[in-house]
Structures are given as C-alpha cells and as structure tokens.
Length: 128
Image (cartoon, rainbow, N blue to C red; front, top):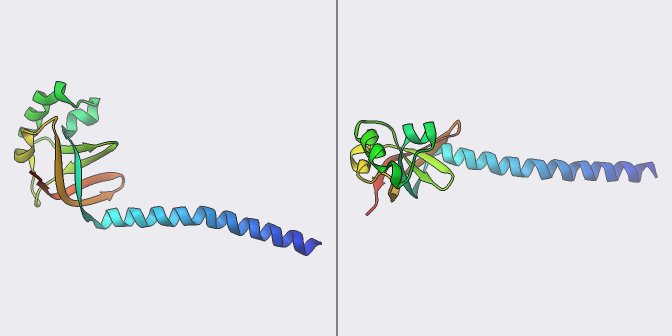
C-alpha cells in the first residue's frame, strides 16, 4: 500500500516538474533566438523615443514634435502593438529616412535583437 502511495506522489511530482520546465525551456529558446538576431519585417508607428517613453506621446497630435525630435538626432523607434523597437540603420542612425514618416505606420525590415528587455531593429530598411 505504501509503495502505491509513493509511486503516485512521484508521478505527480514528475508531472508538475515537467509542466514547469517545458514552458521555461521554450521561453529560454525564444529569448536566445531574439538575442542572436533574425531578419524580420516589423510594421508599426514611427515614434520619437524621448517623448514616447517620457509621456506616451504618439499619433497625429504629436507628429510635428516627433518629426522635430527625430530630425534633431533623438532616438527613433517603431511601436508595433505592445512592442517598442529602437531602430538603427547599417551601424548609423536612420533618422533622416524616418523623420518625415513620424506618426505614420511603416514597414521596416532588419535584424531584430533583444537584450535585457530592450528590442532593436538594426540594419533597418524602410520598405516601400
């Protein structure tokens, strides 16, 4: 009788352990994939990261300010749903190409990486 109880306890413990370990392994694999970078196409709104991160500024009401900040060299990003990406060109800013697109939805293709919660699209190219 005691053997059956021990077996059941062991089986339940094993099932619980697997139930927790498998999702953690999948999540770790996804994070590694983002850290190593993969070319992706991202669609979203062009935002100036200073104003967006400071006070959530975006959209048509903020277009003129965002354009000015991006042209002035402020960091530019793409807001795609709940995901926010810093966007850079081929080892240089891409501000000139994106400033006139402030507050507009665009499609950008590039290497997407993430580290410590920060997402970036590098070698970004604006798709027509």
